[in-house]
Length: 92
Image 1 (spheres, rainbow, N blue to C red):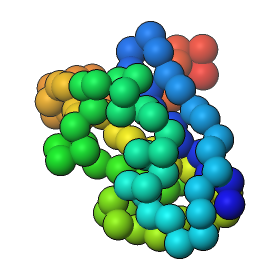
Image 2: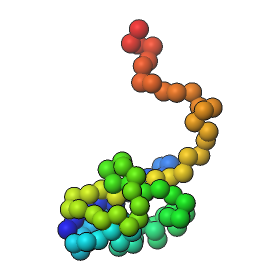
Image 3: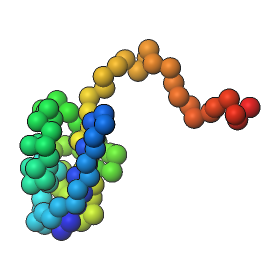
Image 4: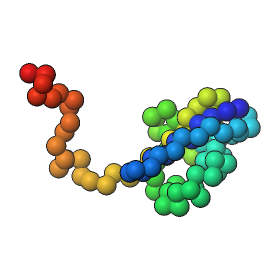
């Protein structure tokens, strides 16, 4: 079955489609994708993963068409960063 694997860093992002066997897990797809070699800073012990923006465990089973996402850790305190609510001055 075909699934996608996605990861993004500042200035570089990748989304690839790969073929995995039925019964494959998120970890299986990540390993087969080769993304860990492309981005050696990925630490699956510390970073969260998901399928279509929903957090899952590495052992989660995949279905055809799923998009596996590897999330980067938060690098700033969200309570100190001004919120962007999508409303600009032009909307007034």
